[in-house]
Length: 344
Ligand code: FNR
Picture 1 (tube, rainbow, N blue to C red):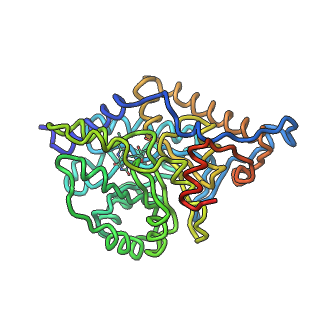
Picture 2 (picture 1 turned 180 degrees about the vertical axis):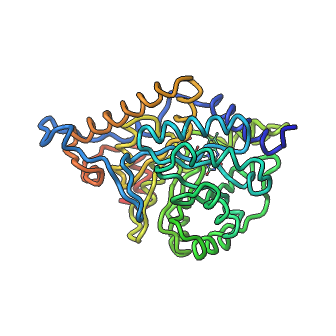
């Protein structure tokens, strides 16, 4: 008998893929000014990045997707093998299902088993406090913890939460969890106000996870029998907008970008807007469901690594942080956004 929660995990996987779209990208609102006179060679480029005490060989990672069902266990196993093969960090999906039903633990611990030495990131919702968070970290011997804030998703989700205690829970988690804590959205982006409030709670790492990729308002509305909330599909800030929101915040905070990232050019644009690391969920899920052989996905990851180095050579960026010095041309729409929001 498949539990309701496991069934929801499988629905999220199939609906994320159903709504996977390859047409409009909000990253088209940004262009990077190139050089025609490269100052160095592809082999001179260093794509490693650091956040807190974590050293990432590759500056993009497999962001939270799944766990908690038979299908998701298989997906997690494949993703972990791909991560181990390519040096990518990997986050698991929300582990709360395995806290309430320990028979689901294996669908998460499979990630550590298949990637013993890589960076593995635990995941829990901000509707939980430090006790649950610590259990999630232990379950997969995680190097870091993601705490997702997903109010918009819950409110559209038919069986979702209608009350929130995120602020107290995040504070409790920050105080009690010893690994680095990343507070992340789930595809609705973050405002300057949200990021500032998070820093006041002691948060040092945020993943702005903006609108423009996997859209949980669409997914959850589709899961409603009445389907009465289609207008929420436009809710939130895009990933470029969220990065602009974060950029004037002169505080001790590392920014991760995710939401709609599909290729190395999207990544380079995120780095140019100040991100230190870039996450992809929908694209990795799509790769996995499209290509049955792990080797094919590994090849694509290696192609992306080469692609990112290419763009770095073509912008005279020897390391990831150099991309912040590259001139950008913003679309009139993004320029107006930046002006209205006072971020430049
Ligand atoms: C997600 N995401 C997610 N995030 C999270 O923190 N905990 C979770 O359990 C899940 N579950 C989940 C399931 C599926 C099927 C997908 C595709 C995504 C959200 C994810 O980490 C990310 O924030 C958004 O998907 C936006 O990034 P992409 O998908 O546009 O790259």
